[in-house]
Image 1 (cartoon, protein in one colour):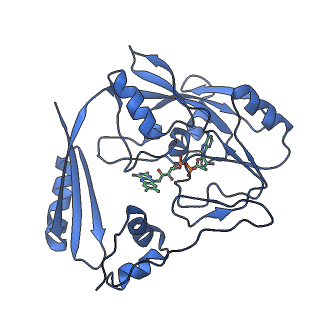
Image 2: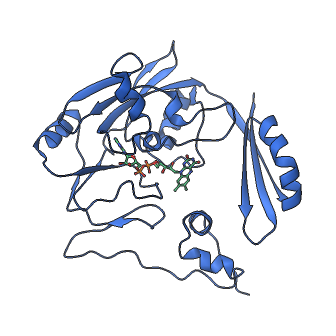
Length: 271
Ligand SMILES: Cc1cc2nc3c(=O)[nH]c(=O)nc-3n(C[C@H](O)[C@H](O)[C@H](O)COP(=O)(O)OP(=O)(O)OC[C@H]3O[C@@H](n4cnc5c(N)ncnc54)[C@H](O)[C@@H]3O)c2cc1C
């Protein structure tokens, strides 16, 4: 039996998106996944694909506005369809377009911090990892996190990306305000007190409400989490899981196909 390194991407594809790598898993890991060449350019148009590689498109145009003013003019002057892209980590077809793909990668970084209320205003294209680093410097931290930290903030909020822990909301739950530019190029400040309907819809907008330029997020004092993981036989995992879920601050479990085992992971806050 040949050995091969199973990457996180292969595992997720195999279990979640049912892509090519699953063939290697279901055959008992007996051969390495074949290297799949990526999508090719067509008539000079470069392909775009998501992280998992299961969504591909050929946008006729790609835009990366420099600032809000440039974004407003772009939207006012455009007549076709525009899809925003964050880090391309959605498995479903939320981003693909054959018209204009718009990246908010230049809208990055912490713009404002209210130390009293512990709210931070952040550029929509900021990656979660960068946000964590910037907050740590200020003695602050995000209240909860998803499984990985490569998503953009606006992308994560668009799908109400969540972490674990029964006492915690999704990332969208901690949004206290945002700025959204509509398709007509109008700039809306949104919160529970201002444009409330748009605010509520924008917190899980799947990219269909306008372009978010910044997000204000409730954060907290910085803290440390201790991770403990354990591989449990399936039966034992079923017996213990409910109790662990209720007892632990954060708890997650990964069923490992064809292994009869479950990987359980818990995180608890430590001083
Ligand atoms: C390895 C991996 C681990 C994951 N772990 C988790 C997890 O633990 N929990 C969970 O809930 N999900 C998880 N996901 C899913 C992921 O968090 C979501 O798909 C998230 O939306 C991806 O963010 P993104 O920045 O890549 O956005 P994209 O996938 O690029 O876009 C998502 C949506 O946001 C829209 N969008 C992006 N930017 C803007 C903007 N500025 N204004 C308006 N709309 C915008 C896009 O049009 C699209 O509709 C995971 C995905 C992967 C690949």
